[in-house]
Image (tube, rainbow, N blue to C red; front, side):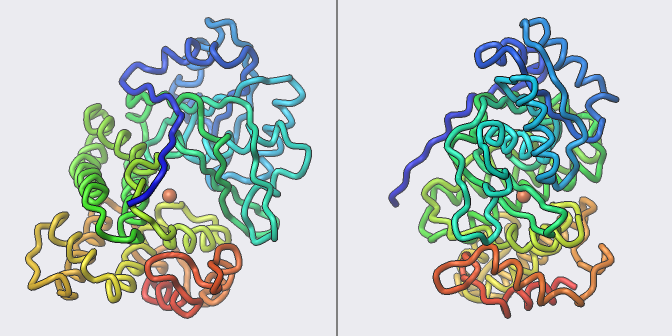
Length: 396
Ligand SMILES: [Fe+2]
C-alpha cells in the first residue's frame, strides 16, 4: 500500500448546525452568492434561516436560484456572472448534489476568463484544470452525492449532450455544514436514490480496487451495512432524525476519499456509463446507477470473483464454497439488486422507458470521454466498447 490522503474541508455535523452558517462564512467573506435549486429550500424555510444567519454575521447575500438536477454549464455561467457583477467573495451552496457541484464550478469560473466548459473533461485534448476558486461552504439538504466534502463536480451540457466531471484541489469546500434536520423533508423516492448513490460510490471503489486492502474493505462494508440498515428507516419515516443522520454521514464518508484512500481504485465505470445515459435522457443519476450497477457487477464478478464472494459473505451472510464460488458471488449481487428494488429504485432501463436503440452510442460516448491508454474504460476489469454494450444490454 502506498498512498497520500488530503481532505482540507472542515466538517461541522449535527442537528441544528445550520445556525452556525454565518459564523463559518464570516471567516471567508463578506459578500456571498447563495446558490439554490428548484425552490424546496424556500418552501421549507431553510433558505430564510440560511440568509438570516448570513445577514446576522454582516454578510450581504446575492442569489443564484434554479440550478437544475443534472446541473448545466449554462447555470454555472449564470451564477459566475452574478458573482462577478456583485463582487462576491464567497459561494454558499444550499441544496443537493447538483447545487453543490454547480457551486464548485461557479467558484472556479468566477476567477477564470475562459469558457467554464473548458474545465469539464469532455474528451478535449487538454482540459483546463482550475487552480483557484472562491471559498465555498456547502450546506447539503439531501444525503446522496458526498459532494459536500470532496473536490469533484459533475456538470452537463444540454447543447452537446455531454455530462462529465472536473476534479481539482481548489474545489474542496472550506466548510461542509451538515445538519440532518434539513433532510427530514426529503421525499421517499429522493431518499432512496440518495441511499443508492452513496452505496454505489462505495461499491465503485470497493470492486475496482487492487484487492488485499483489508482495512479499506472493512470500512466500506461497514458503511454499506449502515446505509442498508438506516436507509430503509429514513425512507419509512422521514422524521427519524437518527436514521437521517446515519444516512447523511454515510453519504459524506462514501465519497470524501477516506474509504478509497489506498484502495488503488482503477476507476468509476458505473458512474461513467451512467453519465452518458443521463446526458442523453436527463434521467435521475441514482436511478441510472441502480440499473447499471447490478448489471456491471455481474460482468465484473466473472473476473474478480473473490471480491464479489467476499461482498456476498460479509454484506448478506451467504455461504461460499471457496473464493472462486461464482454462484455465491451471483447470489450476493441478486440480493443487492433486490435491496435496491425494495427501497423503490428501478433496476431495468425499460422502467425508465429506454430501449436498445442508442446502446452502441452510449458505449462509444462513454469511451470517447474517458479511456485509458489502450482505449478502454478504466475499471477492474477495464472495459471495451463491446463490454459496455453487454452491460447495458443486460440492464434492458
Ligand atoms: Fe454518484
